[in-house]
Length: 86
Length: 325
Image (tube, rainbow over all chains, first blue to last red; front, top):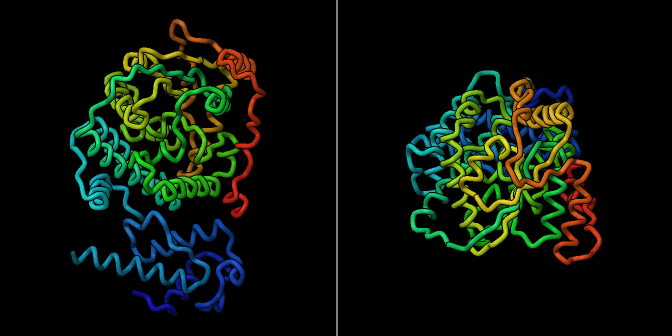
């Protein structure tokens, strides 16, 4: 599982938005990072791919800050580990 | 990449429902073919894969519930008359559907209930409506022209192709996706006759005491004989429009639908598909330009002489749409 610093590193390098620099956990996705609704959807997919989620939930928890996106990543990763070991 | 493997999807659906899907049915035949078709490399966008997985799991879990409910279900013998809006697509059929739903005493199925009819009670209605709303929001995000071409709202009448996904055979898949193996299977007569019998059962579950049902799907026109075998007491409103206009408009709709899921947009599999249909005897032929006049005359016949409802209202943006705009 990535630490939040590693997660932010991947966001900055791989999400595909040049404006994502010096991102902090408390940055607002919309207010500070300037994501629009389409970017928000892409972010969901990005987090799910990072977590290698085969069956992500139908309803994604609300994400307003970078830390929320990281929490979703952690939840998916823990789910993956749990389902593989059961 | 999320999983679209049929066996894994079934396993996940069974895990969520705590019950097993019946094997070797028309439903499983169709769904397996569909899954094979959509797993072609380069077909879907990442977003398309994600949305399609949600759709497939929705259909599979609802199917499991349908099968569980059907195991002990005894259909009523209520005599039922069906009004079917068919004929060519892109001829104001959706508008007519909505207008008739409001002015006449038919039962009809809403969009959210067509997607998740089970449980048959109102349990979880808010959540089910919310999921349908979210689905439309994502479709709007990925293909902004789609809902302008074909308005859909969670609380308004929905055409049969959505509910028929639970029977495994639905043109909703072939409109939204280029799925040649599935499309070939769908066109076989034997497939549709058994599917319509299941569809009849589903409708009886949803409307056990209904004596008048309002259904709509131009796609029934492609199999109207099979439809009438199962629904013999059907009054058909057969919409018409010049063929060239139908073809252009429908293919525009196909392109907009496929933009939700696909990397490359190709509508050629739908070229000239509507040329061969013809209305059964005793159908009411309704040219597109006559839709308004027909509704007015129906209002007169039912004795409900009032002005037509303002259907611009249901085309207005919902609060969710305004938030996302």
